[in-house]
Figure 1 (cartoon, rainbow, N blue to C red):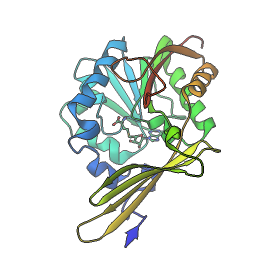
Figure 2 (figure 1 turned 60 degrees about the horizontal axis):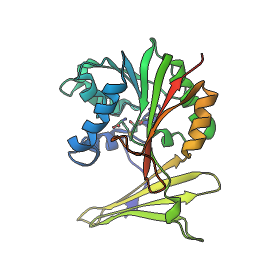
Figure 3 (figure 1 turned 90 degrees about the vertical axis):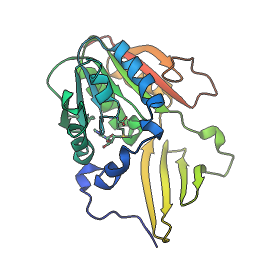
Figure 4 (figure 1 turned 180 degrees about the vertical axis):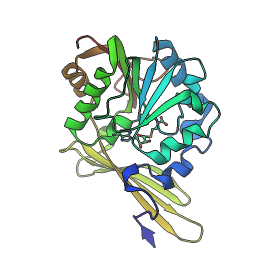
Length: 253
Ligand SMILES: C[S@@+](CC[C@H](N)C(=O)[O-])C[C@H]1O[C@@H](n2cnc3c(N)ncnc32)[C@H](O)[C@@H]1O
């Protein structure tokens, strides 16, 4: 049987409740040092004083950044995710607030606000994404920087009449994205089947925005583009790029 519901999760934790948080720090993938270290290198280089991570999660990036001596604050919607930070070595160096990055205002001024690992797309309306840019700008000192790391939508892989892009097919696991190109939305769909035949279906909604739309959001929020790279290695964005790392600078109050 395939079930779409998780029992025991707190709905206030959104798409990252306890059942997801429990497996989030599994070794490899996004937690591998070769993924984490280049991101931390760039963020350390851009930081010039305290920094704030929107959607800090379990501290995958925040904790190693704090370990380099950068004062790091984190804002996070899911208590289940955030609760893991304090239990990790070096986690007590990260000051965490539970809140919503579209509207929660934290005390203090920051040199850098950053939002990584596609998480801008978890905000599923254009207004909501604009609010994220505005809220980031509100936390920045003049000249401060807002960095976003996000995948580029895979629309070139959609032939006419098709709306699904598979991204994984392995024993016990199938993953695919389903696009609505009119609404600029997609869902990521994860089907997992245990060796005993017990299935789980998890569907997460996202909104995609092209870099140009994000530049406009930044402009609405009083920021302008400073850097745009294809990855943490600061390589140029090209038509073959699959993601971008963009940095905007706060230019007006
Ligand atoms: C893919 S995880 C990324 C976590 C962390 N930044 C990392 O790189 O590992 C997305 C995180 O965003 C959080 N999140 C989603 N929407 C949010 C919102 N509106 N405000 C704050 N956090 C949010 C989720 O709870 C989850 O922890």
